[in-house]
Length: 116
Length: 111
Image 1: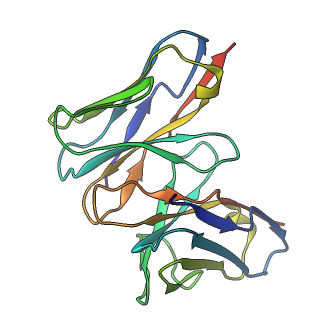
Image 2: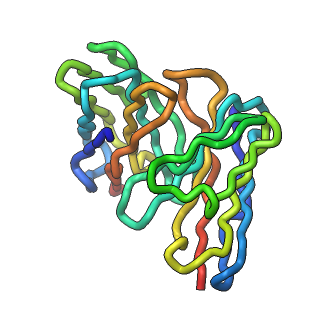
Image 3: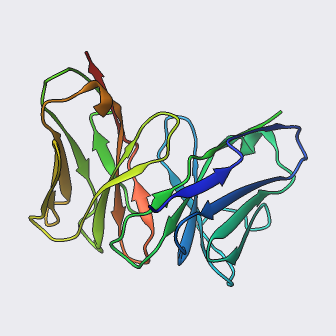
């Protein structure tokens, strides 16, 4: 149980393109979904927290107009990297939470984004 | 901002060896400590979530301890197997369900 599906796994695109990444909880309803980014040799860094039907909460230093998050249902959150540039190339991964604090997060497989 | 530190950064052991790694975290504003196992090309898998000082949890050959007063947790693997090869992440939860991750310890178990 507690499977999270993330698509696509790999994206290679030209600078200026917008890229959408989907995160779905397949067998449970997620009260909260999280989006992380990981640069080489660094830790997973939280970008934003999203709850169904409300605006995402962004971490300090993350541009909300650059990284658009939509959480339309209890099983789907999307991250859109708008007008992507090479510096946005990174590994993006989502997670979902079924309860409140002290519960494990369930992760997708991640998306490797490369902007040329 | 919480800083979570993990050591060692990487570790190579022989099959059958027992091993352990460390996670240190700020002890203030602590709610829970998470351990995840992340195999290459897969998603991170939750191992343990611990909340109480002195907590010990076990899952097969893997166990973990927690000291919230001094801000550290140990993860132990007894009789390592090649399938234990993965990156082990710890993360501190300081309320609001947000996790702050360490960089991980990459374990390689040689047959």
